Figure (cartoon, rainbow, N blue to C red):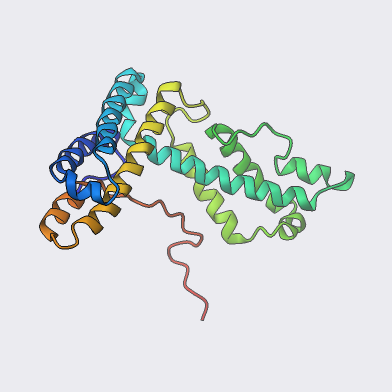
Length: 227
């Protein structure tokens, strides 16, 4: 079963899945998966290959990690955004301006730019020790700070951190996201369509890329649960 992280692997899997789906078009069509879905999937596979060809050499070197980069950025941005919102709520008024500034409120912040997100996380972690009362009022606990430090450390490793995604990289992400939706749909329909045909079900499901979930632990690996 291929890993659903490499766009090239996804493109190859799309063609393999589409071939199997065509061979069982009648059964799948009765379950709402028409042949048109597979035709679009094959087109998306070709688009992914075209986008990869157009990406600069540095991006090609990291092409297998692009989806993980997007997921990491989204995870980190959501975390920073939530904390910034909480800090804003407890620092309203002139007395809170200094603390709000220390937490990075007022800095440029685009959830699509790794450098903005990284800076936001760093400012929050730093300010939390300087303004412990504000951090407490905002509901920021040690586990949150640990998570933000981990996210910041991962963001620093991204190639080209701080630069917005190119048009080709964004198009690549859109095409791969669409393929993932196709894979999920095929998996759901195949489970029903081949309920009485385990061999066909196994063949189709085994061709689908595996979806690896990202998990950011909110506690250190050696932290023991409270007794």
